[in-house]
Length: 121
Image 1: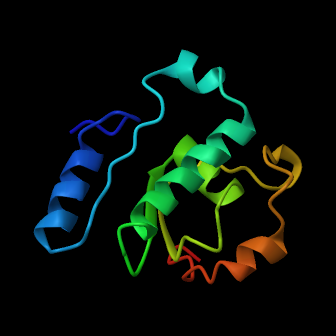
Image 2: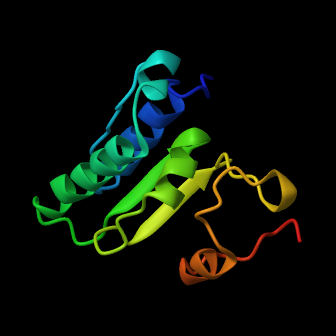
Image 3: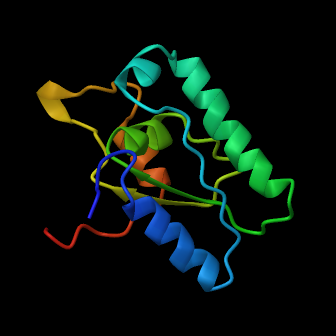
């Protein structure tokens, strides 16, 4: 099973969601480390915004971003809150405390996301 950024886990997820009648759009905005390293935060934010608007423009009632690792960090830090209703994040690359890698995320902002409780405690 491929779990990397271009692995088949996202294809399988999209296929299963579409099979249950959910509209699905799969966006890959980078193909490797060089692509992602060459983008600014503003470019990442515009791409996320454009993907969410693409779905809203097609009358999707609920927009959910599904992302893993670095994509999860981008979703949290560049979330177009007015357009996106839900996030499904798999191991988002967010560090807290003394090792924080995205100081723009505050505890208050995370609390606003209405995240489910952590089952691990």
